[in-house]
Amino acid sequence: EVLLEESGGGLVQPGGSLRLSCADSGFTFSSYALTWVRQAPGRGLEWVSTISANGRDTYYADSVKGQFTISRDNSKNTLYLQMNNLRADDTGLYYCAGWRSGSPPYMDVWGQGTSVTVSS
Amino acid sequence: EIVMTQSPATLSVSPGERATLSCRASQSVSTTLAWYQQKPGQAPRLLIYSASTRATGVPARFSGSGSGTDFTLTISSLQSEDFAVYYCQHYNKWPLTFGQGTKVEIK
Image (cartoon, rainbow over all chains, first blue to last red):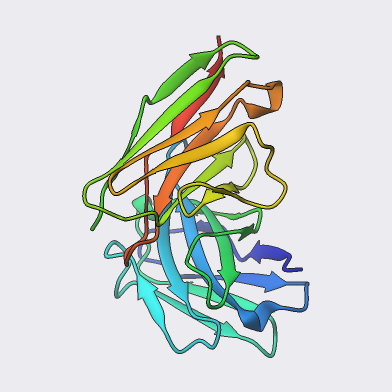
């Protein structure tokens, strides 16, 4: 069973950087494709980025391309999101989510989210 | 990018009544469509995938239908725990996109 827990959120000034982590306390991390989905306060869900189970393939929303980098360390059962040059509209709750590798990309496991606030 | 449009934005329903939520894609996504439920302060939960297949543990009162561009989530008899926001998401191609959500509230 995959159990995801995000960390690394916080308050950062515009233009700053933050690295989010998502750790899996289960035993099947390396067999899951993983994704980041964010939710601005009071708003809907926005897909941000996805990485394949082996880490070779990555995908980004146009809104974060060149600004965010997704990566994973399967030896540490951890997913990362490096966020640079942060803007106010990057504020929100960031969820990691995933699906079993080889399955279509609908998200059947979710973490509880970590909050990012970009403000001076 | 495929734009997903949900309607209505808010649906007021009495407990025990039927709720019908709509999701429309800007181009055909075949049946690569999922529905999620999100309650306040909680992460989303997968309800339906492949447009009509219930995820593990999802009650039978939830059903999905549709293909191509038009999809429906039906809750046959609303229970108190079903009042939440519902999102559709296509996974036909990158980028993945979600609808803006439908809030199901108590009438």
